[in-house]
Image (cartoon, rainbow, N blue to C red; front, side):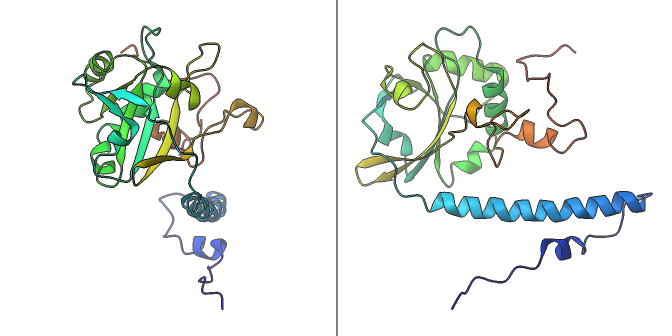
Length: 236
């Protein structure tokens, strides 16, 4: 017998919306309730995708990649887990050839600095960079970040294997999830959308979108825009 609970149709749930806001027109409320039904369906789809993601089998066993912490100590990938059996890493675009880091990487990491305290209650979280940790930390302190843990990627094996560094030297950001099984570390999930996967007029962002910058802008009439990108600084 199927024990899956029967869901109430999204349009029926949307009809339960609270009273209208001041001076809403009938046309606005009708359109808003229709959108609310779609938002409920989207939430359900995100929930299904998250369950499908959690059910992934183990990915490939990782090599004993090396990293360096803020004390200059060399560590293996397994050491980055600490007390947890799950590790999330974000390799940001701040290699030694860059004068300043990628603005989008900066925006994303800035949005995680305070929440990383909460994130680390459930999983380990590490920021990986190809620049020395001292250089990464100097920029972090400039931005006012205090909670993120930074590590230098030692050598290029990790960067080339996990799509941080192309053969032509191009550098990319990489969001990955790892699991530890005994003494072994396995790759579990990675952000794999590319430009070739984007629909017409879109960038290949993730779904759900992990960057609050884009999530908030998606709520607005202008959306993300087509000619705007975050910067490291703005004129007053």
